Length: 122
Image 1: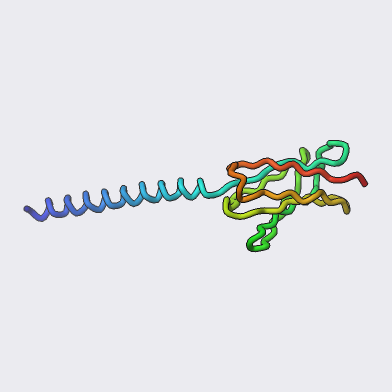
Image 2: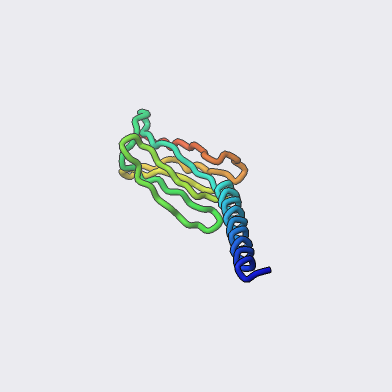
């Protein structure tokens, strides 16, 4: 086998190795995306009106880490990148009023859960 044939075989082997690694990475990335979930919903007042500017907090019950989201005009909130193996507690606060805490359970298999929060009457 000539020197140029050896170089071509080496390049071909390297290209196949890279293609295989890229495919494995894509499969791992796809599997990783399947291991996360999200939760979204709206915050409303006692009169069923969407609340702009409410602070929605989500607490990871394993690590006790808290993340916050401030609702927009339509009262919507959204949290992504959540572990399917963890329970999360959500609540909304607005001008001194707090919604009851709702739990997103690890037994809830939905990838995109919806939990609406309601503030009590003042």
